[in-house]
Length: 272
Image (cartoon, rainbow, N blue to C red; front, side, top):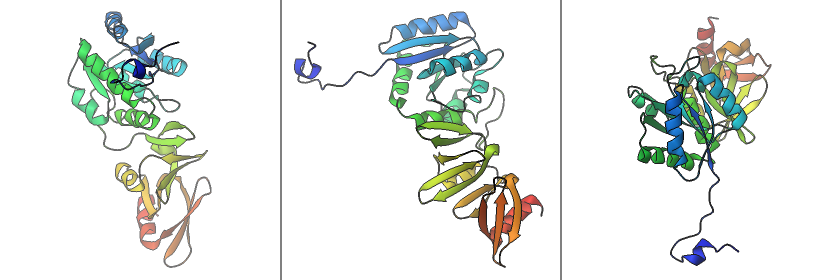
C-alpha cells in the first residue's frame, strides 16, 4: 500500500498530483521542434502529444488532440501563428505560448494577453517558468478563452494592434466560444449578468456592458437603453410609440424600447 506523503514527511503537506500537461509543439522548422520537444521531455508533469509544422495542421491537431498548452511559432508558411488564433472559436481552449526567433513582437504579445513569450533558443529555466504559468491557468477555461481573444487583437505580423474587440467571449454551458461582433445582434444586461444575443442562441458575456460598449465600434453598436447595446446593422424596423419612446425590431424579431435621445443616436448611424 502506498504511503501517504503527509505521513511519510509530516512537514510536507499532501497535495494530489496534477494530471500531465498535454502539449502541442507548432513550428515549421523540424530542428526547432526537436530541440523544444527534448527540453520538454526533461520536465516532469509534461506530455508532448503532437507536433505540427504550420497553422493549418496545428488547427487540426488542436481539434483532434485537445491539448492543454500550445507552443506556437509566429512566422510559418500556409498559416502563421496569429492567423491560426483567428480560427479558434469554440470548444476547449488551450493556453498559448508564443515562440519566435525575433523579439519585436514580444511587447505586443504580452500587451495582448499572451501567457508567455519565448525567444529561440529557449533556455530550460524559461521553459520551466512558462510551463508553470500554463499549469496555473489549467482549469480556468474563461481565462484561456480570453487569452486567445486578446491575442487575436494583435493580428498578423506587421499589422497594427487593434484596440477594438475582434472576438467576444461567450459562455454556453461549460464551454466558452469566441464570437465575431458581426454575428452578435445585441447585448442585454439583467442585473450583473450580460447576455450575448445571436441569431441562433444566447451566451453569457464575460465583460460588463460598459466595457463592451467602450471596446466595440461605435459605427456598429449603440446603446439604446441603460441595459441594452444593439448592433445597428441588425435593426430592421423603428416605430414611434410615444413622443418619448421608440420601438426597434432586430432581424430575429426581438424588440427593444429606446428613449427619444437614444433613438436619435441610432437614426444618425442608420441615416434615417
